[in-house]
Image 1 (tube, rainbow, N blue to C red):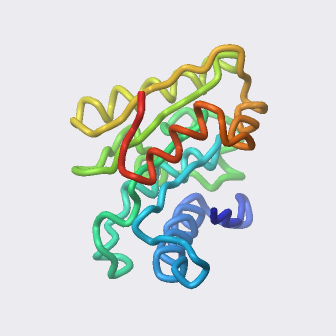
Image 2 (image 1 turned 135 degrees about the horizontal axis):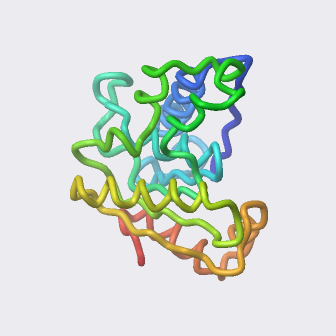
Length: 188
């Protein structure tokens, strides 16, 4: 398991955060074998803002940007992520986040599904704000309309903050589904 860190707004822009996510995957692909890992089994998991990053990684043109094969990432799991940044343009946070209309469109994976993508598991806990639920459902709808392999998983009795606890236990459904992604499968 690789757990990269990244800079945050307002120190850097959202474009820079996405670049850092992508660079972390490229570094992992090139170096993981030296740590006993398999570069052919990379899956990306992200929660909240990290869920946004996980989805954005799937939009990467690996050959063009990093000189890597197209299938670097075998699967991804977003856990209550943000996928449509347009609502942020209408909040007081837009200045601190340095958002423009172009930045928001470029960094909203719900608006720009890729032509091809590995399997994506979109999950959320039902005990949280409607906006996280809507954003997950909208990403699923957008990517299904683009005929991309994805599944939407609503997790009952789970809130935004305790969702990640399931990944600390190897015997949970979430952990099992994330491991399936390393083999290019999205288990519903």
